[in-house]
Length: 92
Image 1 (spheres, rainbow, N blue to C red):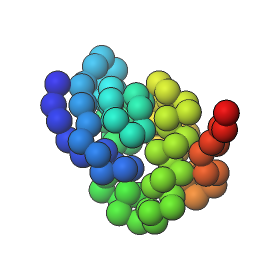
Image 2: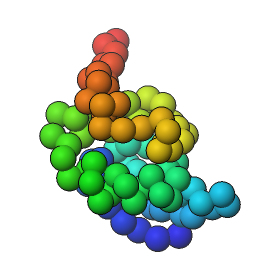
Image 3: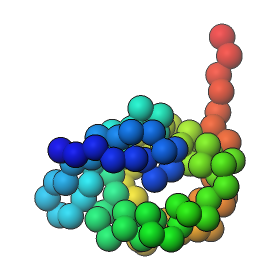
């Protein structure tokens, strides 16, 4: 297990490689999500650099609400990141 910076929120994360070339990520802000190794590299090398702060916050909230989501090349792209709505806040 290693430690790196989250691609989306820039928090320190725990990252572990598991079978089938998948990174298991545990982020204090985004929660637990999974990314295929090739998709992780694509996001790190191109997509993450172009995200605006609002997009980063929306992605972080979305991942937190969808714990365990597997990010793959076929289900993620820049337009997906652009369409994520702000996280839902519940009041008591």
